[in-house]
Length: 408
Image 1 (cartoon, one colour):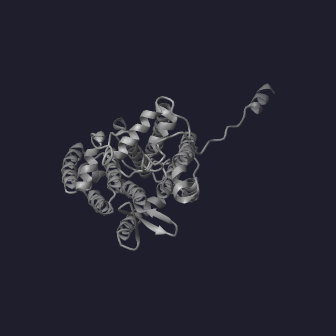
Image 2: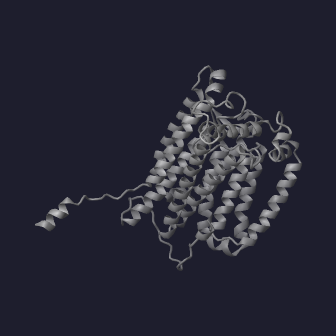
Image 3: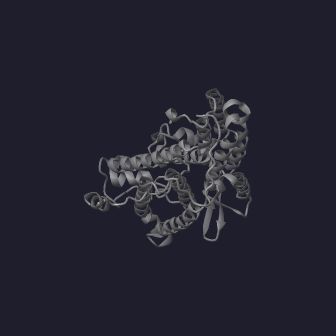
């Protein structure tokens, strides 16, 4: 009787089918991002639109659209993404061509990166980032042995990346080109591509970028200004010097929420590319380090989700998670590096935080894919699976899909 009563007193634990840390980290970054966006954009919004919350309202609208897309994506089995990865890639290439057509593409600050849809603009490069990751994950599964053992398997996707890179540079969007290239190469490295191939490619890319930079005075100026922005603080170095002033004013604990001076038309793009600088000014070094910690946690959970899928013999899910993790880590590091003067100025947003509708929506879709990967992994651990889940264990030798965990 005591045994039965003790059994009755034990609460039945239901398995959790989502990553709590991923959810909490994402919510934390989005919440802080909206708060800092409201603060950084209030003066610009009031001056140009006579509404202090113009950009905040639009960002919330984009977030809601992103959440709707995320809910839809959660219902899709991963096999659907694997099946249509090539189609998504072709769509992204066609859209990158269409955006360059005068009258269709919308030009902002000298760049043709947006297709106008009513009052909104869709930035094609954000869609291209996710499409390339999905395609690369499928390619690495189909040609895993070829990528590891043959140079042709390594070079084939580079031809596709070259086409996308050329189209992006025509906009121009050097930042998106860099993110896509580094993410794709990182995925191939994790798939087991040989190291000497990367060294040769790095040499060729370095030479190409050198000639690309010196061929355009504008690019050369942006690439060299960050080395000493104070040499010309009122011209080419103006944006970076104002960003550094924001960091200097913030000190350890910041000047206080809403008390930034640099956002008052001193720092250009304070609510987009340089939101991190305003955050450091208002919340100080402690706040900036806190945001960095949240990104580290987010990316760490992303790679953990990929590792769990890999252990279950699901290489497509693993490569997809690793690709999303590389994308978020590379873009966030570049944005922060630009803000503190470690990298040349690039037009890249801080994921989940900076103002940008296309970036917010595509990042929401990417996070939803991560939740789907994790959901399927947890179902398989409990021996359950939804009716539409296609789980095919690959009958290959042990360790065939073992990736370089020690290289993370």
